[in-house]
Image 1 (cartoon, rainbow, N blue to C red):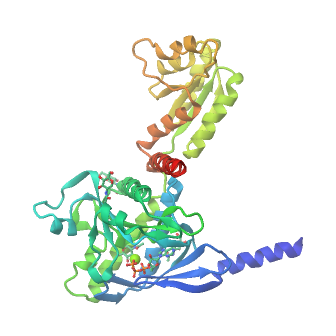
Image 2 (cartoon, protein in one colour):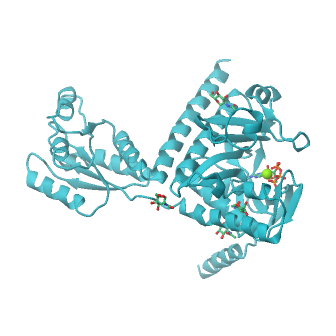
Image 3 (cartoon, rainbow, N blue to C red):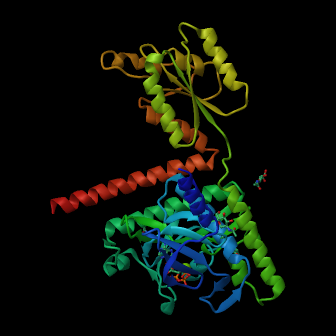
Length: 438
Ligand SMILES: Nc1ncnc2c1ncn2[C@@H]1O[C@H](COP(=O)(O)OP(=O)(O)OP(=O)(O)O)[C@@H](O)[C@H]1O
Ligand SMILES: *[C@@H]1O[C@H](CO)[C@@H](O)[C@H](O)[C@H]1NC(C)=O
Ligand SMILES: *[C@@H]1O[C@H](CO)[C@@H](O)[C@H](O)[C@H]1NC(C)=O
Ligand SMILES: *[C@@H]1O[C@H](CO)[C@@H](O)[C@H](O)[C@H]1NC(C)=O
Ligand SMILES: *[C@@H]1O[C@H](CO)[C@@H](O)[C@H](O)[C@H]1NC(C)=O
Ligand SMILES: [Mg+2]
């Protein structure tokens, strides 16, 4: 037992000292090296190099500390996306300058997503003024081909190339998945940066095929070089790599300024992971016979990271207590959504709704015998009441999450990623069925 504990400790210590056993170098590019991990099949170490490149390495200046900042940015951004529920290659931060990721075969396409027109888009689309806002987002793809300066591609060109990576053929379904995922990822990051009064102007990302799961996942990195950020929507305060590209002369002072900007981003990127508002769902049930129904609501709230408490109270039999409980949750300043669970005649939701300015969601447990009649007690309200009614416990939690998502970007991101994942599942189910019927 003791030797087991000791062994465990040694392993943990080795971990701390970053004694990852590296296998062969699988790839090396301008900014990073990729190593096989001997003890973690299917995973790689992504090691940043301490240099910054622009104009395809025409300029190459070592910038001390850049790797570390890039690493932190990538780690935080991937953590944010992963917690939202978006599939990424990122596994964990390993050191100051390296992280562990799922081994992917990379799809050689850069997906570019734009909210505001600037940069190369203006050159390719003369007549469009800088600052033009895209709604819906503008999506472009570029084939990664340094020798030809990464030409822009159409969907048709990508489809006709018939890439096959890690055994997955990149066809209609896969292209659509990358298209939709890029938009969802942009929207999640845009919402997150908005909490820092920062406009995400545009972004470029790459996807890979996870060699083990054969799934398309967001891979490579997202760091300063991957996006344009304009604090307060003001281009003159840009905090991205454009500052570096725009340098007339690479002086030590200028490089200091670029580095400062990068640090500005990497400081703020941590804040993206902090919840903005701590909301709470309070489920009121008329009797404990509805406990199972209420537990489902609590569980679903948990999947959005929303705290949920369950209380028993009857508006018919103990209205004083109902109002007392209401006052308890109104009194501490925590934003609250009430969910009323009452069978037969739902007095609970309407009484709450008539006496609080907080949102009230009716989620009556409908029974087969009288359900069709009972439901009217939740639907037909006196004037002045604004409670809503949903029937499934999951839907009640989701609706509450949508309310909190208005002010909490982390909750919103989970809803957004869930929408994406549902869309992807449908697409894949259809593809599978098509393949079967052939
Ligand atoms: N999880 C991963 N698994 C396997 N390869 C990866 C992973 N993440 C990134 N890579 C690849 O590692 C290589 C080195 O990265 P780097 O960004 O330094 O290349 P680069 O010089 O910028 O070339 P590129 O134009 O392909 O990005 C790239 O080809 C990248 O696609
Ligand atoms: C942010 O941008 C700065 C400047 O480009 C860069 O040094 C830093 O590495 C970037 N951060 C990340 C995480 O890439
Ligand atoms: C790299 O990222 C990890 C995870 O966020 C962090 O623990 C580590 O400190 C970072 N390194 C640097 C230099 O910021
Ligand atoms: C992404 O999908 C949309 C909707 O199907 C399509 O209009 C658009 O051309 C696609 N974009 C790219 C770059 O493939
Ligand atoms: C964003 O701007 C608003 C209004 O100008 C300000 O109140 C808020 O403090 C700013 N937030 C951050 C994180 O800078
Ligand atoms: Mg690269």
